[in-house]
Image (cartoon, rainbow, N blue to C red):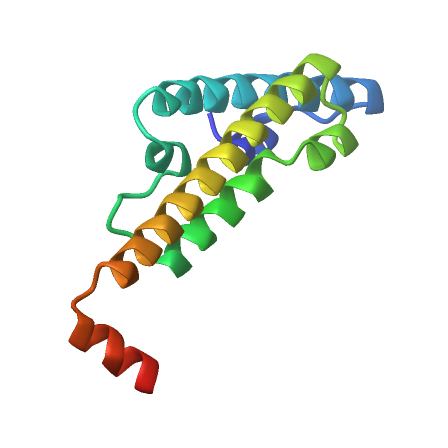
Length: 129
């Protein structure tokens, strides 16, 4: 169940019922998302971000920012999520941050190595430009 669907299906009769309904819907959605991310983390950092390895740097950053926005604990805390849900979100956000940092570092290393081992004519042309 997505967060939007959880909010739409919730019964908001009284304030206490509203808080309980929102907290329950958030907990269910966060647990579902956390299990998907945990399974993806076992495969690759690209899977954690929900992108392929051929994605451009701009698309990678866009996917990262979308995940961060979806998982950021502050917005759920303001909506009345439980401390357990907030802790789970914090763990998942840390996994997303680590995946993005690992991909960026790996791509930077590949770029640097590619420049170091390029044929001398290509290096000379780059330095002259």
